[in-house]
Length: 611
Ligand code: X8Z
Ligand code: ZN
Image 1 (tube, protein in one colour):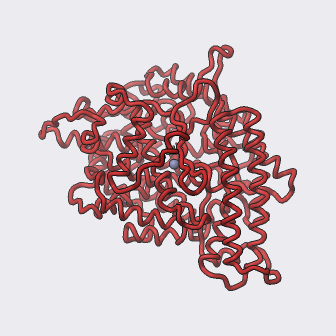
Image 2 (image 1 turned 90 degrees about the vertical axis):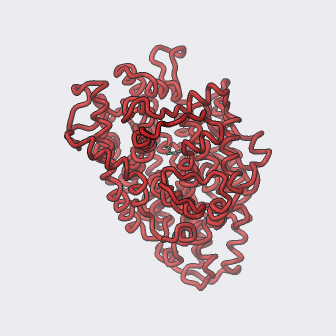
Image 3 (image 1 turned 90 degrees about the horizontal axis):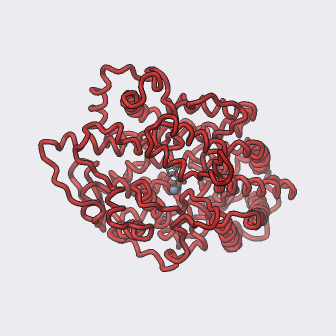
C-alpha cells in the first residue's frame, strides 16, 4: 500500500521536530480556536484510532488476499483516512504561533508528518492517489515472470532462489531480468503518484515529498541530509574493502571477462535480487573454507523447523530478556506462510492493528537462515508496538523510524554461535583453538556480507527518491538515474543494457509500496550502537562480536525503557537513555568489524580496488 499511515506496516513516516518547525511551514496564525491545543490533541488521538483500525483492516486484507475487490476497499479506506488527516492537519495549524504545551506541539508535528504520501486537497485527486497506490502495491505483490505462458510463471521467491542457488551466469541472468520485467508497467503510475503526493506535501507547506520525509528527525531536512552523508563517510572505507574482496573472489568463479577489474560488479551475481545483501554467496567468498561452518539453514531443515517453530524461537529470545509472551491472537491472526490459493504481498512486515494487543506479522517463511533472522527483525517491531502501547496514539511510533528498524536487528547481532547452540538451532561443534582466528574471520565475513554490504543500498534508494520528488530526476531519466546511483554507491551495475522502457526501481518493494528507506540505512548504523550498549548493560567484558544478550534481564530492561518512550521525546533523548550519547555514530560498526577490516586490507593488498 502506498499511503502508509504510521500504523500499518512497520511504521512509516514517524517523525518529530521541535515546536519551532511547526511555525516554519508557511501558515499564518488565525483566530484562537475554541478548544485548547491539548484538547485538540486528545480528540485527534481518539478519532485517529477509529481510522487507523479501519485502514489496517482494509490494507491487511488487501495484502493477504490480492484482488480487485480488496484493492478497491483498501483504496477507499485510505481515502477516508487521508480526508480526515488533511483536515486534522489544517485544524492543527490554527495553533501555530500560540503558546501550547510541548507535548501538544510534538503531537501536532507527529500528526503532520504521519503519512508517507499526503493527498492533494481535491477529492478526485485524492481518490486517484489512493487507487494508484493500491494498484502499485498489488502489482508488486502479484508480480510474476511468465516467459512461455501461464504455466511457466515464476514469482519472486522462485526467481530469487535461482540467484541464491545457481552459479550459472546465464540462469542467474534470466532470473534477474525476469523479475525486472514486472515493474515496467508501473512507470506511468509512479510518475503520476509523484505528482499527486508532491502536491499533497506542498499543501502542507513542504517543498516536496522528499523534504517532508527528511523532516522527521528532530533536525532540519538539510541537517538530516548532511547527517546521512557523514555516516556514509564513516563506513565507506569498510564497504570499499569488502567490495574489492568480493569482486576478486567472484572473478574466480565467473572469470575476469564477466567480472572485470576496476568495474562495478554485475548486479545478478551477489545472491540477492537487488544485490543489497550478499550473504547468499558466502560459499564463494568464505575466507577459510571448511573452518567452523555454521549451516543454520540445513540445521533448521534437518530438525523439521517450520514457520511456527521458527517464530517461537524468536519469541523465546525476547522473553528470555524479560519481554512478554506474544498474545494468542498473534498466532491465530498472523500470516506466516505463503498461501497456495491466492496472491499476497510476501514482503515481510509487522502490524499493530489496534494500537493495543492485536499485533501480527505477515511473512512467507521458509526454513532458511535468512528468514530466521527476518523473523527476529519483525518481532523487534512487534515488541516496540507492545512496549509503547500505553503512550497516546500519536506517540506510538519509533523514536525515529530508524529505531523501529533497528530493534530486531540488534537482536540479530546477539545470535552468536553460542546462542544458536544454546537455543538448539544448530548442533554444538568443537572448534580447534588453533583455528580460532580463522573462524573469527569467517564469522565476521558472513555477518559483513549482510550488514556492511547493505549500507550503500540503504542510502541510495532515497537518494533516488529525493531526486525524483524534487524534480532533479525527471521521469525521462528514472532508470538512468537509478543505475547511476547504484554504480556510484554500491559499485554494482546492470548486467545487460537498460532503457527508459524499464523501471528498475519498481522491482524493489519499497518503491511501489512507498516505504521510506533511509530508515534502514540508519538502522544498520544504530543497531551496532544499541548492541554495544546492551552488552555493556549486561556487564559483558569480551569482544563485541562474541556478545549475546540472550537471557539477560538487565539488558532487556534497559531496552524496554527506551522502547516504552515511543516517539514521546526527540530521538536524541531516547538514544541517550540507552547509549549515553545523543548522536548516531558509524564508529560502532567500524569497531565491530575491526578484525575483518585488518584482514581485508592485507588480503586486498595486491588487488586493484575501486570502480
Ligand atoms: O523491508 C525490510 C523488512 C521489513 S520492515 C523485512 N527490510 C529491508 C528490505 O528488505 O529491503 C529489512 C532490511 C532492509
Ligand atoms: Zn522492518
